[in-house]
Length: 355
Length: 275
Image 1 (cartoon, rainbow over the protein chains, first blue to last red):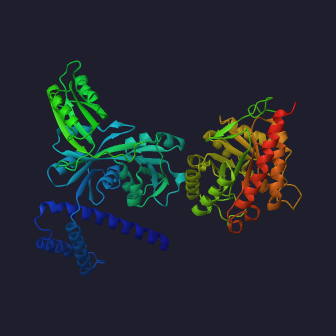
Image 2: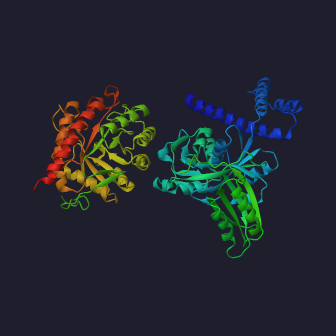
Image 3: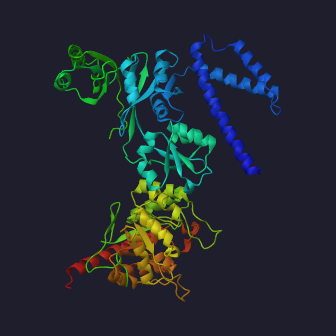
């Protein structure tokens, strides 16, 4: 190994150290929910003692203890900052995090494995807010999330439409001409099918877009690339070979911001879920109320009811606030026509990316 | 000429190629830009300048076929991204040279037209590859090539199912040393007799002398060419290649102010002339 290679490996390790510290800080912020005071001297003593029990000949105890003390001090400083913990599904760099950053600019973004973890975390108070995707302009409804929305106690307090710009990412030392395999979430691979076929690239499904980027950066497999967000490129230090490689151009995903507490600052859009009796004309009678009140519907989607699969839940988004008189009247009339009704929340509509 | 099943012309038939709104094969199309993409700043400045002067397409090399391996080889992928940005800002379609068959599909993602350089005219593997890409191709004449060899190369591309070939005469090698190459303007009417494909002229690389570009451009328009490809650089003295023959934006504008009226005049008189 010559100097160039050595330095390149050192740089890689330094980056990984920081990525791991980021993860550690995220966990420290989550621990705050379970402590009364930020500072826990007993715990600090244990942490330093653990370091002392490790025997690494190039890392002297005095150095490692000093390093850990600096890390702990920074961790405590961050905990004092009082950033809201915003949960999203996926790894750092996922489009969910892009949405979270848009909705809560000063938050601490906490990656969760499953959508269920996002919901449960916020419901139990371990996390402050959650960001989940409800529909994608090409793929349609995100089934798992819609299902969880029917049973959750959480309220919707915001929405963000995130334009999905898929980027082809590779490690810096990869020659783009040699790329043969491309890793990403099956949905992302499907959305870039044209690009992959034109360049004779083989899609390899992976559980997550940002996860694929993370794996690529860490393992650096030969002749490989990943499809993920530009945020992932930034976080994992990957080169963007090309941006916007998706086939359909107006590809965007709509995310909802969830909270345990209702939004009291109002808004111009409302989401509800309801189910009607299984008889002809019942759905129509509900929709007619909105039509007659001139309330504009922005989304309607159906989903089989968990308890009786032959019956359906309807997701309805419309323009208006439940504090509007005509909206309140419609909702009241609806109660008589539905077998169940759930008000998810009123929030400000995201008009940023409207065509 | 034998065996040019697809390239041979039929009387009255002329191929018109649409490149993102710019049509080559009817009217006069001017393609301008620096020899190579040197930096984002340089390229964007050039793009805006040529657009203002009336050019309809932007050229710039990201992969350069230099005679010496030690000369600037081009910015590669980074150059392609800069070209993409120039298009985004000005709306001008992009033409750029491809040298390596492995780059064809990648360059096709960034550029609108793939250029085959004079030294690669008979690179048959490359011709097949650009044929398969389905992207419009500027096929430059080989500096030692006959019209028949040239049209056979076009046939290679056409036979892959790609009908969008634009021929580009850029000078042929003769014994003359004063000019870099000898611009063969007779190729314009000759080609128009032999094939339905459009033909454009590159007066920059052919003459290799700044002072000769304008008169030869005028002559090319008078001969009836479908377009011109001209090198324009904001600061030719700082160019990384071919600086001596590049026009400044001001000189280019002057050129445009002379050839456009000439072309209009010829088009008007042509339409009123009796056969």
